[in-house]
Image 1 (cartoon, rainbow, N blue to C red):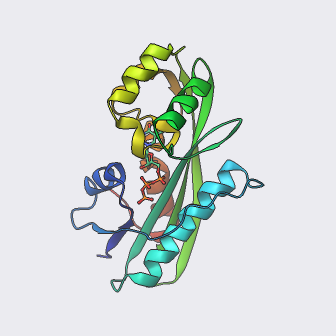
Image 2 (cartoon, rainbow, N blue to C red; image 1 turned 90 degrees about the vertical axis):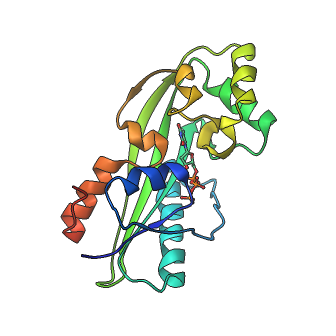
Length: 192
Ligand SMILES: Cc1cn([C@H]2C[C@H](O)[C@@H](COP(=O)(O)OP(=O)(O)OP(=O)(O)O)O2)c(=O)[nH]c1=O
């Protein structure tokens, strides 16, 4: 049985993958998340996921299948985690009453057989009209801080969302179905 190594410090990614990998090894990547203005959101998340995977490939003594991911929100521009509460307020104002895309890039590296696959998943998320009062109440929960786009669909952020089209887990930061398909097709490994 090959080691599965998650290159992430995201509590959501850890929780999601742990359900399928009892002996999951977790290694935090040490990378700067640089966004090139000329890149599409799809290219951006794949590049950053690859950088995270490569960093852990270089630093981790254990060999196995390394999985890394990166999530951004896209509406008119690429949005990562808000810098502060004010930034989060402006992002949520922009998302209010509109449909945005969430992209998660996945990078899988087999450090034994030296194979690598990079891909992404896309989900559309429609937001309710958000009053300034609702945004302020939401920000008070503090949930916005470590989330792309300043909200968490799996938390109080569910009240901001009118509907989604596509993979729910992709919005939470790890598209499990796409990951399982990639693992099965390219690495002969099944999550279940
Ligand atoms: C939109 C949205 C994002 N998110 C999270 C998923 C990601 O953890 C985070 C985006 O940040 P990322 O930079 O993708 O990941 P991270 O810094 O949390 O973790 P690591 O780089 O160590 O893997 O936003 C939610 O949890 N719920 C949501 O609804």
